Image (cartoon, rainbow over the protein chains, first blue to last red):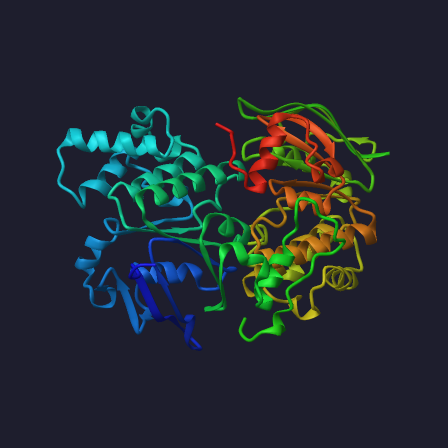
Length: 278
Length: 249
C-alpha cells in the first residue's frame, strides 16, 4: 500500500449527559489507502460517529479529539469550518442511510445534483447538464433527462439512493463514506446499489468506508473489516478471513445470524458478560 | 381446521387496489411466511386480517369463523398482531403495565395482575420492567413487550409484521428464539411478513412469495433451503439474499 490517504489515531467522540461526558468512540485508530474498508457493529457501537467525525460533522456539544486525523496530508483537526466546506463533497463525501430524509423535498433531483457540482466547480450550464446526465447514467438510471426533473417523492427508494450516490460522486471525491447506504432498501435493490458503488469506487480508484451492521454484506464488498463494539475496535481482519475471526463478539455476531439453510433449533445468543463494555 | 383461510381476497386503499385475488389456507399450528419486496401487499394482507384495512372483498375466515369487515371482538381474542417497529408501536406515555392490561380491560377479563406477571415471565422480561415506560427499555425489550401485549388475550394466531427487522442481529436472534419457543409452548399459529429469507428458514414451515399484490408461488421451507424455488422471481429474491448480483431490472 502507498502512503495512506486517511490516517486516524486515537479518535475519541464524547457527548455530555447529566451523568457526565459519555464517550461513544473510545480511541480508535486506523489507516486507509485507496481500498475498501468496512466498519461493522451494532447500534450504539460508534460506527456512524466515526464516519461523521472524519468529516467533522459532529456539532457541539459533541466533542471530537484525536492524536491524528489526517486526510491526504491535511490535518483535519486544524481546518476551519470554511476550509472543511471545500473538502466535504469535493474530496470526501458521504452517502447517508435513508434517501427519504436526506434529499431536499422541494428541489428536483437534477437541481440537487447540480448544486453539489456547482458548489465546487464553476461550469457552464450546458456542461453541468451533460455531467448530470452522464452521472445519472453511470448509476444506471436509464432515462436521466426525465429523472432529473422529478422531485424526491416521485422516485422509489432504490432510485432515490442512486440519486444520492450520483450527488455524492459528481464532484469526484477521493474518499466516499457510505453510512448504511442500503439498509432502507429491499434486498433485491440492495445488491444493485452496492454494485454501483463498488463499480464506481473501483473504476475511479477511490477509497471507500462502508459502515454497516451487516457482516456478510460488508465482507462481500470490502477488502478489510473493522468490527466495532461499544466504541472500540475489537477486531480487524481481511474480508476473506472473516470466518477465522477470533474475538468472541465477532464470532457471536456471525453465529447469531440465521442462514438460508437453517438447521439449528435455537440461535446462539451473545453473552454480553464475556467482554468488557456494553 | 385451518387457522386462517383467505379466499379470493382483494384489498384496496381508496381507489387503489393493492392485493389481487389472494387465496391461502394456513393450518392450525403452522408457521407461514409472506415474503416479497416493499409494496408487494404482504403487510396489507396482515392488516386486513387484523381489521386495520377494512376495504376488502372476498372472504377471510379465522379458525373456521368468517370475519366481518368492522371491529370484530371475537377475532381479536383469537388473532393478535405484532408490529415492525417497537419504537413506534408502544404508547410512549403508558407504562408497560398499562399497555399490557388494556386488552384485558377492553375484553372485560379479570385477574389482571396475575396475567401480567405470567406473560412478562413468558417473554423473558424481569418483573422490574412492569412499571417502566417504553423509553426506559432497549429495542429488544420493547419488542418483547409488544409480543407480551399480543399474548395477553391468549390468542391462537399471531400476525407478525417484520418482527425483527428494526433490531440488531444479536437481538434479532433473541427474539427469534423467543418466538420459536412461544410457538412450541402454546401451540400458536404464525403468519409472518418478512423480506428476510434466512428468518423464514429459521422460523417458518411454508412460505408464499408475493409480487405486485399477487402470490407468485407457495413452497415448503425445505424447498427454500435447497434453493428449489420454481418461479424466476422467487429465484431472483433468493439470489439477492445470497448476494449474487441481482438481475432484477
